[in-house]
Image 1 (cartoon, helix red, strand yellow):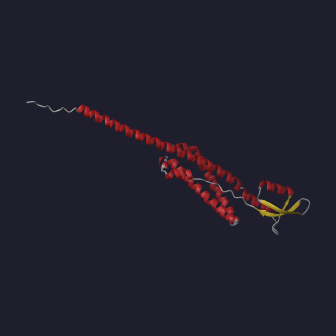
Image 2 (cartoon, helix red, strand yellow; image 1 turned 60 degrees about the vertical axis):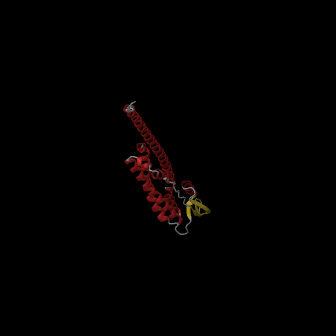
Image 3 (tube, helix red, strand yellow; image 1 turned 90 degrees about the vertical axis):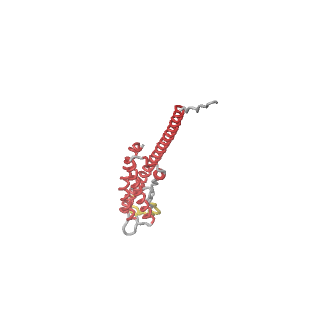
Length: 219
């Protein structure tokens, strides 16, 4: 009679295989997490670069528009001083008119002039107010928010950006009001709004410059 011995289980081999499988799975999970972390960091860096570029463009738009719009009250005041209270004609010397046209180009479109004496003329024409509307974008900011990329920003960075874009919206809202006042020819209202815009502009410009100096801290 032949006796069969049962096969001995090689536990060392089995445990070794389990250990290798565990190590393999752990390495795969670590690599996936590392890869995902790198992708998040890359997306965050791209988002910050785009926001920084947007802020730089908005700052240029803001300054350029202000340099033009700040002359509107000055032009209206200078025009008011030259304008006759009786017939609405502009009374001025040739040199004064040349200086006015140089200081405020395009504001007064002269149709006719009448010589009053050797140096003084009466001018008639139309006035034209050129209101510059800055294109202040927040596309990069909103896109980053909608994609959830701003969740990785630090608190101070996120707070600063939120505050800055809120001020930007205030400026944009006042600019829209100014355009409406100009369209309806409400000059007194236009001047009041321009005064508000100048105050908001100063705040927004300071916020732009501060964020550009510190945006690297968002990384």
